[in-house]
Image (cartoon, rainbow, N blue to C red; front, side, top):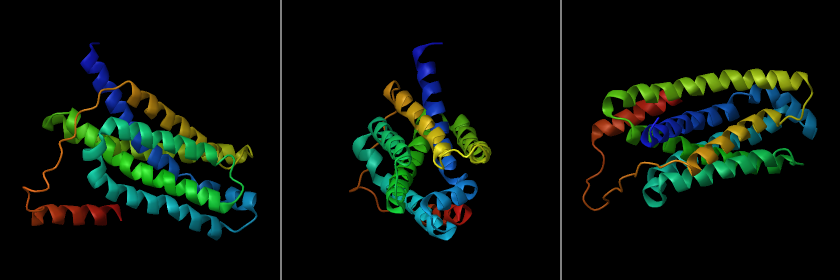
Amino acid sequence: MDLPVRNTLRLTVLSFLAYFVMSGMLAPWGVISGSVADFFGTTETDVTERFGWLTGGNLLGAILALTVYHRFGIRALMLTLYALILASVVSLLLAKDLQSIQVAFGVIGTCCGVGLAGAALTISLTYQAERRASMLVITDGCFSIAGYLCSAIAVLFVSWALHWSMTYQVVGFVALVIVLLSAFSIFPQANPTDSKGGHGWPVTAWLCIGGLFLYTL
């Protein structure tokens, strides 16, 4: 297998795993929220309110992703983002109060929001049009598979009475793999936008964005 093929394979796996991380953070919460509440001596409603920082951060990251990749490059951001996710996930093992996990979830959510855009951008720039759509569809499949696997792992870990964050340590391991793949891969270059020559997005683009928003909602 020659170098370009290996590099494409690494970028593809990396992109799929980025979706795994986001789904792996979201899906297990319904299983472990009771354990989290017991650990901190509070109610499930209270801990779920803190979990909202993950989804709020994800929205913030999606907004930031509109500009950051053209300024810093995909490789540098993917390395930084998933190193931060790894550190934040590990910090959950040491968290002694809800404020700590709130901040960790916020950081993870924001990094995932930017990272998912980077994964989609990597796929878009790596594959030609005839294969690009199918590869992006596969990323959605990875998201679904990760949700199933991480929920099943969470059930197993809860039955073993392990620390509530152990499921997320599995996600942290996936983030570590992304960091390693990013370090040894050559990413395609994101084309900088021309802020002076454009006249904004057409109405059809905004309609597509609105439809995608409703679908995601």
